[in-house]
Length: 112
Image 1 (cartoon, rainbow, N blue to C red):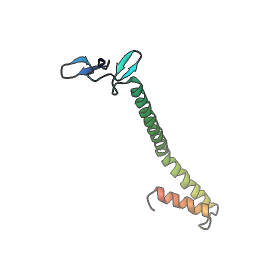
Image 2 (image 1 turned 90 degrees about the vertical axis):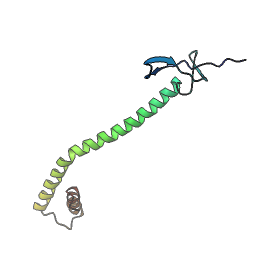
Image 3 (image 1 turned 30 degrees about the horizontal axis):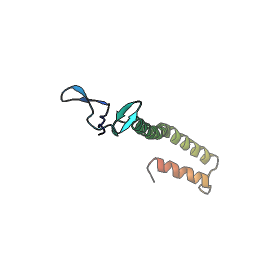
Image 4 (image 1 turned 30 degrees about the vertical axis):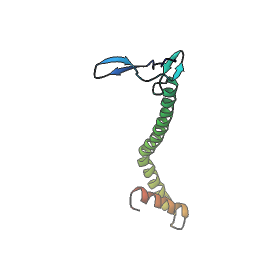
């Protein structure tokens, strides 16, 4: 009769404030130790890697948003001064780029 191998992982029990061995059967063998599916070190490493990649993507997206949020007031001021300069140099509403610039300024100020 084959013996049932127990998971090698130690678990902290907050009720007794002590460590004890996992009571699940060790169905996976790694480096001579048996682990259950929950405590398999390879599976845990893969899950952590996937979560880290997801968190890194989210962090990079937030960083890009924060950079843009920080630069938005300066960009709006630059657009306003460019529109003013174009108006003084003879920019008219018939010029599509000038019209787009005015529309972008209005949208950024919440007027559109």
